[in-house]
Structures are given as C-alpha cells and as structure tokens.
Length: 279
Image (tube, rainbow, N blue to C red):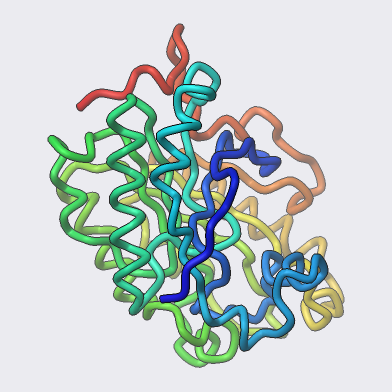
C-alpha cells in the first residue's frame, strides 16, 4: 500500500454520538456511491481528484508514533475513540489496514481507552482475545440492506452483507459488545425491501443507530421522503424496545429529534466512562 505521513491523528468528532476519532487511512477501497460524504469532502478540499484515486487507499505510516505523543495529551478528556468516519478500519481485502487497526486498538486499550469500531469489512477473530484487546470495546457493522444487487450498485467493493453479519455474530457469541449502523438507509425508489427482515437478521446486537440517506438525488425525489424515514425510525425504535436493544435515531431522520440517545456509547458511570475500561 502507498503511505502518507500526518502531523496529527486523534481529533474530537462533530458526529452527534461520537467522542474522539481516528482516521488512519486516506481513501477507501469499498467505493460506496451513495455518494460518500468523506470522498466528496476530500475532493472539495483538493486532497483527491477522482473516484479512482479514492479507491486507492493510503495508510498513515506514522499513526502509532502519533498516538504515543497524543494519548498523554488527550487521555483525561477521552471517553472513547471511534474508528473510523472517513475511511474503513477493516477494509475488505486490505490486510495491511486491519493489521494497523488492531495495533491502534491495542495501543488505546493499553491506556484504558475503549474503542468503538465500524466497518463494512470482516472482523478478525483475534479480537475475542480479551486479555490483549479487553472486553469493553464495541464492534459494529454498517448494514442497510440484504439485497445483493443493491450492494453491487452502491457498495460495490465492500464485504458481502452475510459475511459482515457472520463475523459480527461471532464476536457477539464470544461475549463482546456489538452494534449496527443502519445509515444511510435507502428509500424504496432505490431498493424495495423489508426493514423488519433486516432488523431480525441483527436482533442479537446491543445497539442500533438508524439514519436517513442524504446528498442522493434519487432519494430526495421520493415523494414522501420525510414520512418514510419517520415511519422507519418508529419501526426501529419499537423493534429495539421489544428486543432490549439500545438505539439512536440520527438527527434529521425523524420529525422530532431525541437528544438523549446521542449518548448511546457513553456509559452511565459516576466517573469518566473512558477510565472504566478493564482488561
């Protein structure tokens, strides 16, 4: 893989349910076409020039050195660190990315900093070694459909849906915390599907985040877009309540935002939850 060097790595995210974040790869070989907000921003800033260039990820070669420098500086502020919002930490068919991700998780856990991880790839089974990686990290997959043709069109190079679910369920069965990001959920004019069927496939998880699709012309042209997402969110909430699953509905998805659930990854402890990590 090509490599780049950065001056900083850890940053406080503006995503509503996040805390601190790391993006240790530039670009993403999964090539999602929703469109990908991260790719749009990189093009707008002149960092990349094309979709083809975005598909050729570059690894941050000095990521671990930066963490050694930045963890002491931010440790007292960090509740948890998310991997990742502008790339994928377990990029399908890129073992170099997964290797670095595992080292980053281990490095953060060494300082009692827990991680939330989100991928469209496959989880390495080694994560079940809680003596090395601990037991309070939270592992998630993005899952917005089960339709193979839809995936070919909009998530062309990511891991198959069933493989994602299987790898996540393996972690769950070993006692680890798991979650689902159902964002950006497509409108029926992009794919006809049964939301309840998708939810049943992941009923084993601890948490679900649901959100609408933005920046997509076809989706915005769906005549009852607002009502559709409001009703879908209601279905997710009802399903989660019935199955004892925590949930958060992304702002703008429903007609009324529930601000309380944005703390979905913050534990209800008297002390900073980031310091309650145990190995």
